[in-house]
Amino acid sequence: MSGTQRLRNFTFLKQMVMPFEDSFWKLLLIISLRYLIVASVAFAIFYLFRKKVWQHKKIQLRFPAHSDYYREIIYSIITAFIFAAVGYLTFLTAFVQYTQTYFNIGDYGWGYFALSVVMMIVFHDTYFYWMHWLMHRPAVFRWVHKVHHLSTNPSPWAAMAFHPIEAVFEALIITVIAVAFPVHPMAIAIFLLFMMLYNVYGHLGYELYPRGFAASAIGRWINTSVNHNQHHQHFTGNYGLYFLWWDRWMGTLRSDYDTKFEEVTARYSNKAAGKV
Image 1: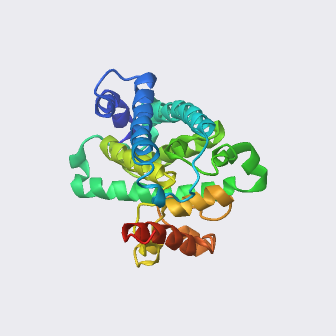
Image 2 (image 1 turned 120 degrees about the horizontal axis):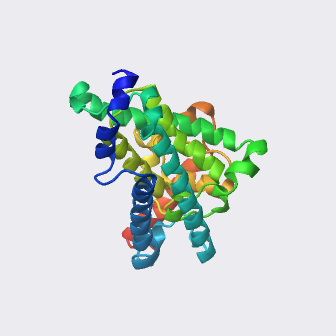
Image 3 (image 1 turned 90 degrees about the vertical axis):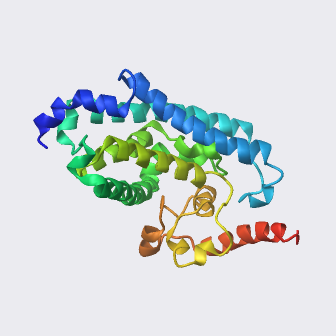
């Protein structure tokens, strides 16, 4: 599809992305609600209603201060504005002609549609690992990434708690993806929902995978809440997002990760067995 044809499809794109009048503010509402709903459900379950029942699943047994929650929410709201701005500029302005956005699933078929979601996840994991690694260089960390690391014991609210500069780089993944290969708006929406769900899990403060998962043939390549919690607590190593292959290949996986995962999951396995 040519750039001119994509430009002609602005109206159709707007109808696909939002079932109501298109505007920056509506896009902001969608992003904000996605964050607030997913994070608030996780927070309500693990930090309010089931807090005592499931406390043995807590990675760091202490809980964040209320001031940490407020800070995480405020920065996340700022991030939502930035995400909305990048999304608007990428898909709802003339820039869309430089992307490979398509609107008819039949153009590539349902097989490619499903594959494109997987491609976005894998692509994002690589983008995030190297961006994250760079943000931990001393000259960059204090100006860009330090805000996110104020959450040394993160909660679900920390999922979007970024410095504005970091928020821009986090948001640009969607622009890079749209330019790199053909993407349908609905596939992007599925990818973004998956991203939010896994990001909230990564900052949950609780481990949900079972004992032995991290050492299994599949689990050794999958990121876990323990893994990312260690990153927030110690500031070094464990730079991956969805997967652990870049950390393993580049030697940045913390040497105590497997031990910590077993320690945490053994605790709640013993609880279930009535041993604690």
